[in-house]
Length: 208
Image 1 (cartoon, one colour):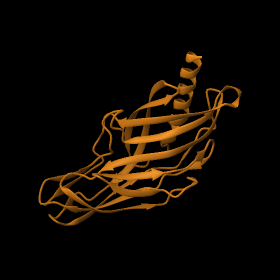
Image 2 (cartoon, one colour):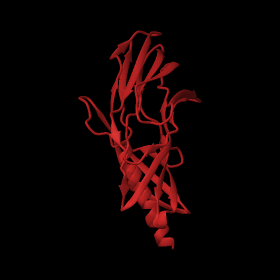
Image 3 (cartoon, one colour):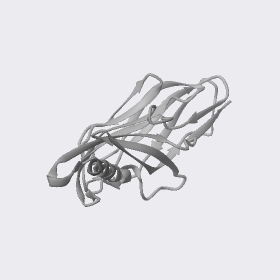
Image 4 (cartoon, one colour):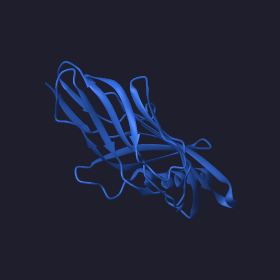
């Protein structure tokens, strides 16, 4: 039974791996590789997934000036099955983006997005700007995550470099839960936690 449980956890991990493997990347897209760990019934499965995002920000900004950092994902599809098992849905997605050094947070907005079966939210939590998508996004469904805009005020000097959050499994920048039908139709929920490795700079704005 332990082997079966471990296999089912791996299946759940495979089910969610394509979720953020954004296809059809636009020009100047940046590929983020997440290291992920899914858990169920005391078992774990490690896997990786790629996410392409198209970031933009001004090259320069005056000290004390305003600027916007934009991160734009692309449409995708939740897989209908994985390893012969039906994917019910993916839900409770949380993505973190730290407020860049040498800047002050003003606000954050969301635009677009579709097929999410919920209203995404974004807010400042501590030193992170946090995007939450409750879902569920059903297996086989098309969806698009919203475009995130961070409105910032520049500091006095230096550079404003934006990145995604997360440094380890204990400090994840991306979390979500995959729900799949196991043997005999028994539902299995596998929470996953991920961090970008490596974590590239998305945008860089020089102050001054």
